[in-house]
Amino acid sequence: MRLVIMGPPGAGKGTQAGLIAEHYNIPAISTGDIFRAMKTADTPLADQLRAIMDSGGYVNDELTNAIVATRLSEADCENGFLMDGYPRTVAQVGALDKELASNGRQLDGVISLVADVEEIVARLLKRAQIEGRSDDNEDTIRVRLQVYAEQTAPLLEIYRARGILVEVDGIGPIDEVSERVFDALDKLKSNSAA
Ligand code: ADP
Image (cartoon, rainbow, N blue to C red; front, side, top):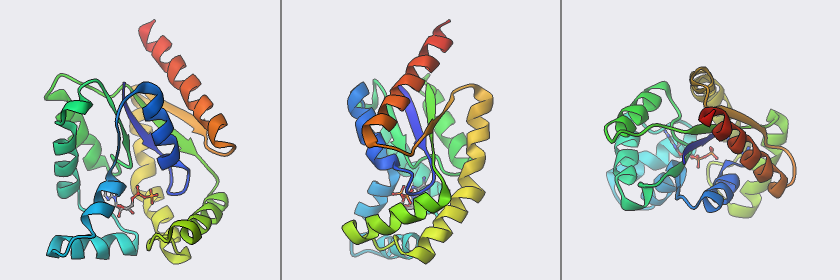
């Protein structure tokens, strides 16, 4: 399974990504986690990443695509993967397609977690208290939701047109949401096999 999980910040992507990856025995790759690890260094690049991420904006496509291509070339991705937080721009969609095609591969499914904006803001503010993420304050959250709506939501239509989009209600107990995802992916698989 080569999968992508999408959804606005705070829709529970990271949590679901972990469960889905475990279920299908594939690695979950989070560009957010990769960048959070990178920004702790004492380098000019880390300074740049801190400034971008703490303001709620996106890291540039060139750097992001290069990091993902390197990660996908690792051995554990041979039988599949779940990308969490990538692609996020139309340019990243193209870069991922190209990267996969160069190895005769393609995406099997794109999971879209759907959640209401106000529910999301409340969840993110709660997460900020628990985890202390520096990009989880109300102003940054609003910026991230807006950037998502402008730059990332249009990607859903690209994948819908390809017939590989599955939309799942992200509200509810964690296990219930995962079950919805598994059911939706099973349906997608049996449709594409037919
Ligand atoms: P969220 O929960 O807000 O979706 P993530 O952990 O996925 O957060 O990402 C945190 C930040 O890392 C983003 O706001 C952005 O600055 C950066 N980032 C992560 N993935 C990408 C990407 N594919 N392209 C550009 N920037 C990214």
